[in-house]
Image (cartoon, rainbow, N blue to C red; front, side):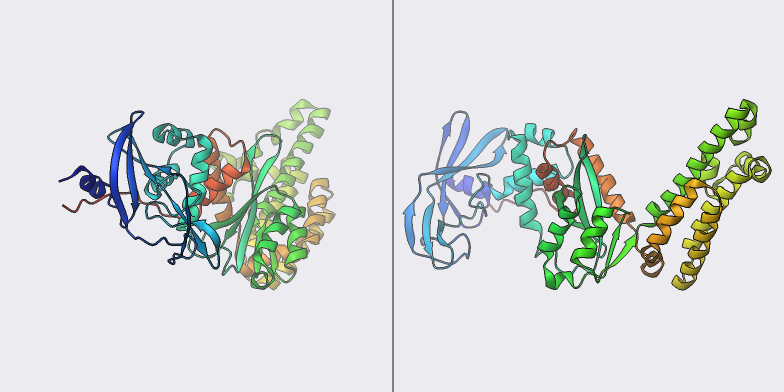
Length: 412
């Protein structure tokens, strides 16, 4: 068997002909060309008349036994009616801008999903930024169709990736559970860019948008898709009430301690018992709360407000929830607890968007889960210096892309 025939079988790339090889600077340079005689346009894949021939260029391929391997060929340019003068299509690489074979990029993408970029860089001997560029091409290769098609319910959230308030806004499809869009920033203009990319026709199909209580995101949704129902995430709404309970506990402790340090003991150590659900309390914590109405009436009222609010959101009838929330707001405003008076104003202002959770039963839980995965990615990379590198990793790891390691079956 000739060496060129063996190399052809080892590469096993359909449509590629090996015409020679040589060793150069410790690397194996394999001379190749397409098996077809007439060049094909790299855009439309149709046979087109030749224009000229470019100088020989090289593509990095997977190593053989630790030896670097490059494919070298003189690429022709063609004249296409639709694309103009473009480089011809070659079977070992589907991108005219890449200097790596498709199998090499698939191997890099497979490991990048599972390892930190520095390890991938050292293993393949490529630049750190090149890993991100390859990830972008792998995502484009594996994502079928436009990810913004068919969206009806979306979740919006921000991710902090560096200190000094560096954020990336992500949009998640509730139907598929995957991230479909990301951009640097967390302003109203950032989210507006998503709706502009979505377009008017597809924007009319958006029925619900789950967000936290960010004024910037509310502004963008109201302006770009005013017909869509905003749904405030239940976790963030209940967090406001829990924070009001914590603020009341601190105020009571400071007020009692200023009068007599011993008088503050009944409210000391109640942070976690007050936050917990009643069925998760330990016997000791339950005993502490059972006497709270005698020890501190103000803090007991705050605790009842917190528990009643959670109980209301557990109900299934939107009209019932709306009526009970209005009653809760009235009680909170009369409670003479400053923190709850402030929260009551916020809940009354956004009452319709809070009740929408009961109607749609959508939360940002799936969005927060993906954000936790993204935080692991940022920690794995020890922080990203640019948003574009993080966005490439987001699209590679959080869009349900399945990459298999490239394998070759020899046919001898």
